[in-house]
Image (cartoon, rainbow, N blue to C red; front, top):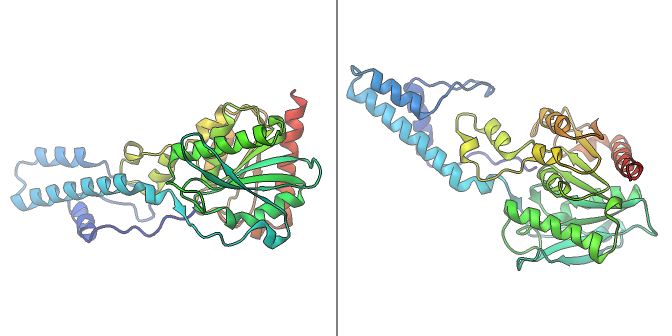
Length: 330
């Protein structure tokens, strides 16, 4: 997941924050505990103090208006805090010596989805359907494609609409539809048995892969560095706003994993400063048996760089475990 940019909104925000402070609200300095209860408490306080002068009441009113304005701003602009697509294809599998096919997927609603199919020779150990995170495009995952190839797995990686060469705009509905098109391409056009396909998702892609796993008997689901849900993440970032009411996105990884019909492996790092390991543990606790939790190393986007050979071994073990466990249940 790409880190949200520094918050930029109208120039009145600093003054509004000061007014909120004058109105008697406080924000914890470390951001962990914020006892702000919103405008109803402030309004009740104003009504209960008839002796408060006009200036103080004006401060309360402006503070409430600023709070409501900030909430409205985030409601309208929240898509910019979820998706960070780029259009330029900066690398291809050929750059690391891998043969690949350009693929165009049909999500069935008039859209088009660009993908790469990177096969191994022969049957290999299985297939991976790769749902990437919320930033960049598929060309920024070339090193991961090389890793899967070294482990003996063919990979289909795709770009959500609005990313890379996939036209359109990203949305939660579209990302699910794009992943469905990728699944149907693997199990339909390419004829791969569903029980030989492992769904792999990183960060936001973990939510997409988990959604896909709900109604499909895949060979396994691997969720790496994922959040429990967008409202949960939003509440952590903006604890002073009613994010759970404002959010137009769900991406509820935890609930989707709970309905998975295949073995589940959850990978997360205690060093992840963007999506804390508590998210990974909560997802694991929601997963049905059989499931595994694997602790990896590095910050949010550093597992491959920091973990190196250890990460490669851990991912290889997770893939092999998923397929072996799936086969034993048939």
